[in-house]
Length: 284
Image 1 (tube, rainbow, N blue to C red):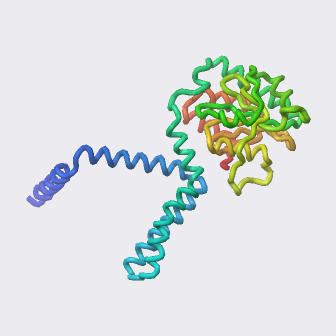
Image 2 (cartoon, one colour; image 1 turned 90 degrees about the horizontal axis):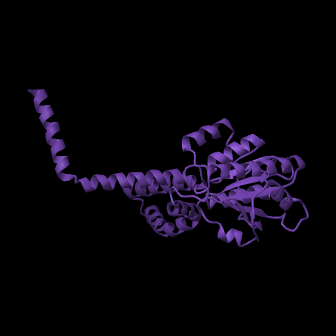
Image 3 (cartoon, rainbow, N blue to C red; image 1 turned 60 degrees about the vertical axis):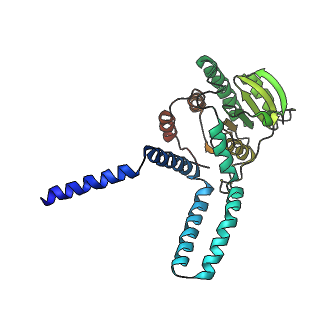
């Protein structure tokens, strides 16, 4: 009898819960949970993560001061939190901009998606050939491959070319003391849209001292867009690739081609992550 009564109690509790909770409430909860999950993914492993931890501590201290009747501390923290909303918008501006840009991107449409697979393979062959040559000769290079986020403002900062992307042309652009060697090349589709373009530098202060201006510019532009950037170091000749604010270094010619094809042909995230794990994918 006790077991039957216990079971009936559970059934009554569930029934009462279902009468109170509407299907719209469940959908509402699921949407909020999804948004929180996405927000956590954006914040994770960025400088915003530490700020969120600090904000959480402030909220806990404020609540404790309220419970313990520490009126002065509670007053200060409560007013600080009100002003802090505006401060957070300023501090989180790069992360908020990146999140809004991701929302605004077309989910499955890309400049490279409309190109044939052969076009992308030919493009990556030309870029890898040029990067390998410049690596051996220690010629600095910065090649930006535009994807879904348009880089018109960056293109306008340089010299318009609209020329077919080829290894000889890329090498010729970056030869030292030539008019277009200083700056970045922007590749749109399979065409070099412009050269000698100016890129924004990353604001990350925790980068290795080994990374020069080219590498910082590569990370800077990928923090604000979904482009892929190939960097050749003038000092060491090492080839690197930056994407989504991350950078992998010391790539060989074959590794460079493999990574570019996976990024530009939209292979699955699992395949790309497995490939990154084989290399030492360096977080910014």
